[in-house]
Image 1 (cartoon, helix red, strand yellow):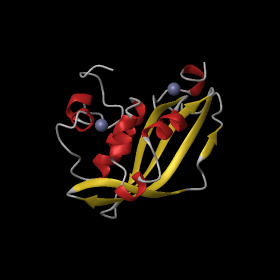
Image 2 (cartoon, rainbow, N blue to C red):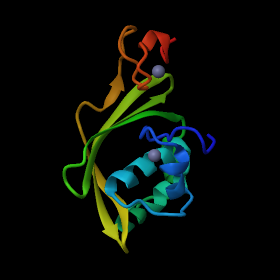
Image 3 (cartoon, rainbow, N blue to C red):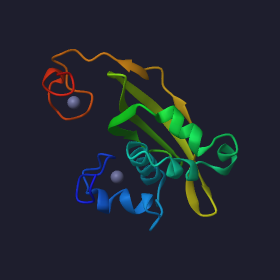
Length: 155
Ligand SMILES: [Zn+2]
Ligand SMILES: [Zn+2]
């Protein structure tokens, strides 16, 4: 991905002006939503060090960059939809990814906390509609292109 393309987090902004400065560590996400978006972009870019670094300290004890990388291998991240950010420390979102030629949705309400002045990911509640998606040929493509599945990723 080059810097002048659209940000993976689907904000509609350029990568350069959206999540890239966070992944480059030149600045830090000012809100849980920005942190959530930047973590999504980091997954999409396979930047697992960033994923690790933005976990809350308590969570970092139980995971490693290697483990994150292992559990993410083979997934390609296609779409992110922010559902709500009503509570100041929570972000509900749907993320769509592809694995072994199948489509999946992660629908989660994430909780964030501020440590040493930086927002970090604590944990999340996963909704029951998460899991395998079975788009019909005439459904809208889960990747969010706006095209029919049969004319996009389902070809
Ligand atoms: Zn972004
Ligand atoms: Zn598609």
